[in-house]
Image (cartoon, rainbow, N blue to C red; front, side):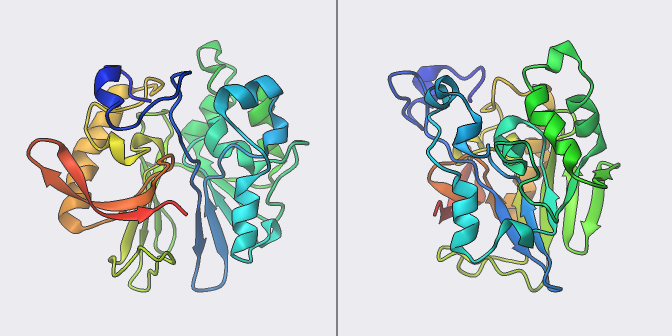
Length: 272
């Protein structure tokens, strides 16, 4: 998760277990639009039962399907999701788009992903095989009439803009939400402003706010740093909260520049 950063440094931020694993969450964001439609951004890895016992043990997964339990907790059924936005198509972000049998988990939703990401995931390129295993990607074809993001910056809906960051994958996107009526339903949200940035894997935890702290499995690592160099100063200057996809303690945070650490958390939004 920290690439070239030596373990004695990163382990001060997140302590690994005896198997060198660190705790992570697979955060998703449920967005309710003014017209009543519901948008889900990312899906986590899906039900534990889709993975072998060995895979569950390696990744520390299970039991159950936390995403479905979380949706049920806010009174939202899978059938209520109208749009499904995916930052990218790795197993821990798109795995929950289908159930253990390979059926769409959100049968009424339109799938939205960047065309470049879709092309890479379906290319059969042996260099990308481990990133996009067929058993994870093929079931996504069951979603009818997917919408492919074509450009580097596209307003998908009023107030929701997809921005291709690259870095983690070629077609990786972050999502910027903007609305004067934006309300974050979380006890820690306070009076955050009218914007929110869902950063996906280009800044997966609060420990990745430093430019060189990035995953070893970033396909284009310098592009991740270029994205951070552009967007992290903007988020700090404009008080745009960043939502993390893997942080075990914080769903998101506002940040500020720091002379020694580059960026630090100012106001954290705790993981439920």
